[in-house]
Each structure stands twice: as C-alpha cells, then as structure tokens.
Amino acid sequence: MANDSFIGWMTRIQQHMETALAAFLPHADTLPPRLHEAMRYVTLGGGKRVRPLLAFAAGEITGASEDNLARVAAALEMVHVYSLVHDDMPCMDDDVLRRGKPTCHVAYDEATALLAGDALQTLAFETISAPMAGVEPANQLAMTHLLARASGHAGMAGGQGIDLASVGQALSLPELEFMHMLKTGALIRAAVLLGALAGKPLSAEEKDRLDIFAKRIGLAFQVVDDVLDCEADTATLGKTAGKDAAHDKPTYVSLMGLSAAKRFARELRDEAFAALEGFGASADRLKAMADYIVARSF
Image (tube, rainbow, N blue to C red; front, side, top):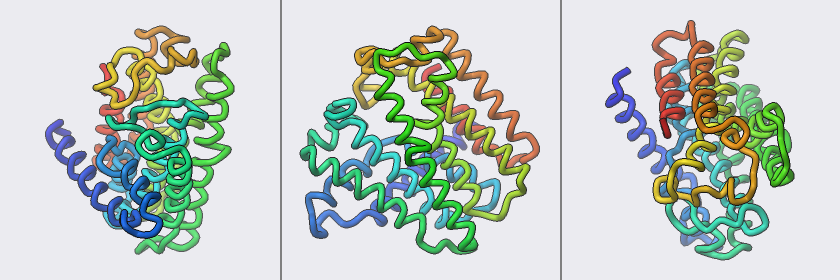
C-alpha cells in the first residue's frame, strides 16, 4: 500500500471521527454546561485516534459499515480519553499538559475532571450498546462485554493499578509485559477485535489470528511510547516528556536499553504481520497501522 494512500485514509478517518464524536457527545450548552464543555474539551480537537483507526482497519476484514465502525470507534475513544483525564490528575501522574493543551483539571478543576472522566466512561457504553445494523444482539452484547473487560480491573484500570504500585520498584520483563498487556494493550486489542466484530462473522481461527496481531501490536505501541518518552521533546509528544524517568517508573528502555527496545518493537511488528497471513488484501490497513505505530520514533 502506497504511503500517500495510507496517509489519505488515516486523515479521512480522523476527520470522520471528529465529526462522529462531536455528534455523540452532549452539546456544550446542555445542562450542566460546565461538565459537557469539559467532556468536549478533552475529546475533540486532539489525539491521533489510534484506537479508532485500528477499529476501522480491522473492519475492512469483515466488511463492517462505516456507521457501525464510527459507533465502536467513538466508544473506544471515549474510554481512552476518560483514562487520560484521570491519569493526569494530581492523585495519579499530576500532569499539566495533554494533547498539546492544559489537562482537564488544570483547564477546569479537579472535581470537573473527575466527573468528565466518569461521564465519558458511561457514555462509551451507552454508545456501543445502541443498536447496530447487521449485528446480532448476542454479538453486540459480546462486544460490550469485551469493551468492559478491556477497560476495567482485568484491563486498563488494573494495569494502571499495577503501574502506580510499581513506581520505584524493580520489575522483571515478564512483569512489565503483564502490566502493559493490561494498561495499554487491552484497549488496543479491543479496538482490533471490536472493529472486526462490527461486520460479518469470523471463524474461531480468524479471531485467534486477529487476537495475536492485536496483542503484539498493543505491546509494540507501549514499547514505542517508552522510547518516545526518552527521545522526543514535549512539543512533539503533546504531553510532558521524560516523566517516566522523572517518576522512576519501570519502562522497556530502563530494563532493556534504547537500542534493544527499538529492536523489540520491530520484532513485535513482524510477529503481528505473520498473524495476518491468510487474510489477503483486506488486512492491508492493519499492516499499515502496525508500521505506523512502530515508525512513530524510528
């Protein structure tokens, strides 16, 4: 796939998601206006939309409609954004910059940030549980269950809990991988699987191969994040650079070294590619997304 073709597709989906998210979110002047303004502030006008892009890419394998994919992708992005709002608060990472602008608790206040995150989380489930054309109710229930598992104690929230408990601790590579499988990888895995499930049914073997792809690329995403935190500046990242080292957090760079971490990310991408063998051209977007995720820094 030509690079300019992929960039064009990515830009189109990002713009489509901005419109879709704006429609799914409450209008800023709906009561209570401060809460709804904060929800729109943190969700719109920023971010690469990696999880929505993965959902749309996976949907090409099963012929999912753009309407279904926009609904699934919006729910994923709402969960992701709520986690960022809470992660940035003083009780956790206490950060002041996200997506190139002041974090929610700085722009508003801590109570509003907490409520905005809570409201985005529940709106995500309201969004994904609404009827989708061509998706059987039982399958949609399974999709909602998958998002819940990826978001909660067995996924993102659980990984964040491990992360907070690991500050200043010496983790082994398997322990670090387990933490990131939950904290970052679970929602990326959900993005791939939910995008595919929004279309025609998959065989058990096809689901397994997509699951392998999603797990590998989810881990690669975190490895590259660790590299970027070490190498990129704040302006490039849109968030505070070097905060992992400043907070004495275990990372792939601190455990493996910079060169080894970059090599590991490329190996994970190659394993992700191998899992897509047999899907043919319908998996080209997913392969391009894997390249994009790993090539963010090298």
